[in-house]
Amino acid sequence: MSPIIYQRIEGADYRHIYVVGDLHGCLSMLEEQLERVRFDAASDLLISVGDLADRGPDCIGCLALIEEPWFVCVRGNHEQMAIDALNETNIERWLRNGGEWFYALEGEREEEARRLINKADQLPHVIEISTLKGVVVVAHADYTSDLYEFGKPLDGYQVIWNRERINYALAGRYSDISGAQAFYFGHTPVEHPQVFANQHYIDTGAVFGGYLTVQQIQ
Image 1 (cartoon, rainbow, N blue to C red):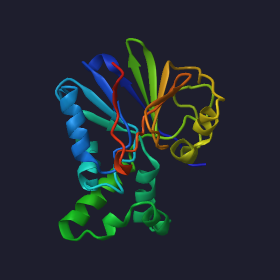
Image 2 (cartoon, rainbow, N blue to C red; image 1 turned 90 degrees about the horizontal axis):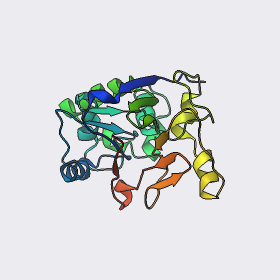
Image 3 (cartoon, rainbow, N blue to C red; image 1 turned 90 degrees about the vertical axis):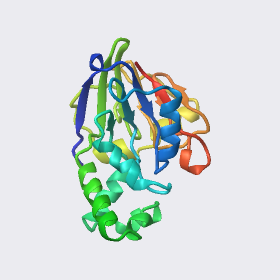
């Protein structure tokens, strides 16, 4: 079982907090959405559900967001595939899932991408945010327990890959995850944002001809 990393954020430190769905290199879409909500980089925070790169036009630009002070991100399966590939593990899996852009890079661009991917290896699997309306939890694919506890040991692989909960929900079988007010996930593309009990699924397929979802949580 791969260990899971948690991060805690105090919402009172920010004016507004937003959550964004899977970017997959769609940096211009993000810039349009941030302009629409009048995002203020000096006082607001944007939280990503992961999958910054692969498949889209500006993978390096999206990965570089992890160095911005107004941006935080949970680890997605695409970050993990990139990290694994740079460590000579499962390269073919990354290539099958959009990683070919990296192997077309040369020189400084390759060095920059490699540096950012290595930095992504520090990303948490779960971010907990204390807001005025309660605790909000962000993870990439799922929180694989029906009771949330900060620091609870879970399988990091399942947190970034699991689709069992949303598949049950789409079939009409869902219930709250206790221990927090709301959960935000990406990973599984949906035509429009979906809410099942206290779980929000916000990967609206930006890179697949859909659109990018940005939702305000504070």
